[in-house]
Image 1 (tube, helix red, strand yellow):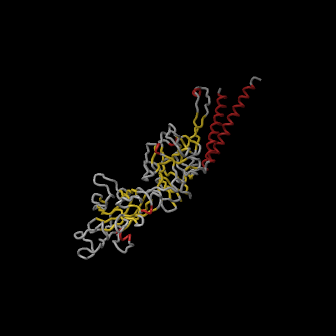
Image 2: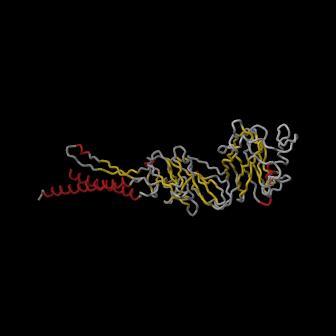
Image 3: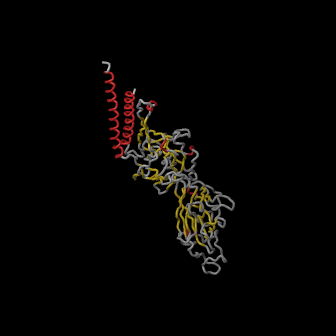
Length: 487
């Protein structure tokens, strides 16, 4: 009956507008929720088969809710280093538990990046979701991102390194040696002119008159380096040690004499006198200013042609009485240490250009004994621990998940989402790579709710609901008149 269909259409109008009101209510309530995505209720008409005949039968409507997950909210600056926002596409990968996560455990995805450190040192947001990422290797400090293997992700912990000690195993140097550096005065030679002459007496790396001697004697004897690079090293017990790489330009084109040494109080080199020397040789550069490993003679610091050993130095243990090379001082009581020194693989590496001699960046892994003072996260998602003794250590890299259809993700509690068939599976990426957004540290993504839009929708929804109720009361009056015909 057409009157019954009209009443049912009014009921569907009440139900649909109730859903719209619920969506608007959610939006208004979450206007200040970090990373919240507004929801709208779109209406779709329903048509019955008899509507095409001469007697029209109302079908009504239904409400279809839609969440604009893809829409990015405004970014707000904060004072916390652990507040993170994603500038661009992607979601933080999170889990509901901090430890013992399996690849089969549920992963939730969120853009709510208000993270804090819990009592066990894990990063979690206000909804109790734990941040996932790729952890740094404890030995090398390297971070390997594997977008295809979910099992490589782990919960990021920032305080587990506080108070621990890990020996340095790798140092990367990015520095420039000025090609304007004049040839250094060496020692009195055959001509007694005090100037290095390749045709006369070569620089003797085994005898006195070394840069290590100049360092060991406080400049009273030996040869003063043209340039020095100080390298911080953590030993096996977490103490901070310094070794020095010193350079002095020779009389040969594109060639520098180089020595690696430490203070004689911490390094014993087996010589008489002890100069703390670890390695010595020459470093050569190509005509374009890049380093030439083929011509270098700095023993052990460069691979041999065709591969060979990695560029490393070895400092024997303090109790190694049979050591013939450099060793830690006996009084220190620390273990043997092998350190890889990268002069070619670090960004920029070691170069010889016309600018001033300067060290652009010296980075070393290992953890000296110290109390964690701060944690910082950069745009590439690298999590770095800063200790009170001034040293830093890279701990992890935040993972970003992207979807082909993020609007189809299924909403979960805590302003998070889970995968659906329509959203497609996720792809793990490093921040800023492969279409994934960069990390904005000390920033939070605001809700995408606009109050003016929501209050306008509130008014129109209220009017529509009242109109639908009028349909029901009108149909009821018509049915009442129909029933009165029998009287």
